[in-house]
Length: 211
Image 1 (cartoon, rainbow, N blue to C red):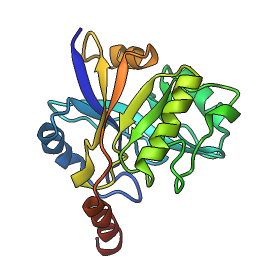
Image 2: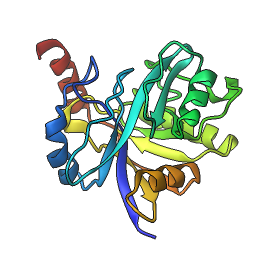
Image 3: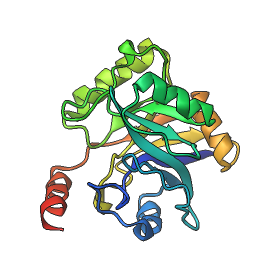
Image 4: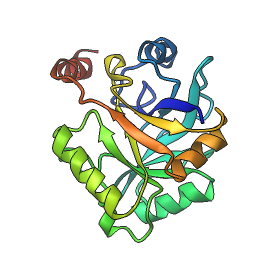
């Protein structure tokens, strides 16, 4: 079965704190050897974002009362400030895939899997931007194994230089969005990638205060 490489956690200028332009993504993805990405703006769903020559999953990163939840494959905005359980249910009602990102990053709003009544479809166990990369991602992997959930990876990129620092290898029979989502839910995935470099973390701060 063919494999696809998708960065499942990318922010562009559609997020208040990100600085990558949509039109920059084709070259960035090509340069990093990726087939596509999920554009996961903060509480801002942009279903019309399409890029020629790349797979773009419709997605959003939702701020719940319990932390962030990523919805992949949704078609309507889901309001923020619901509980994580309610948010996961609403993602599934739209036929989407609910992912808990960076569950142990000490500086992020993190959903704790063990406190949920409704389990997500996957856990992000490689997040390049996590402050304590090795410890945070190790703890996330521990939860994924404990709760028997698929593991995915994403860069959590907010600047052009970090797109593709982490990604997910997906065994999908086609490039059709429905097949990709089913592959993720079925666990035919593996996370890959590295921590964002100190230089790029400094660049991110510079973008924040200079641009």
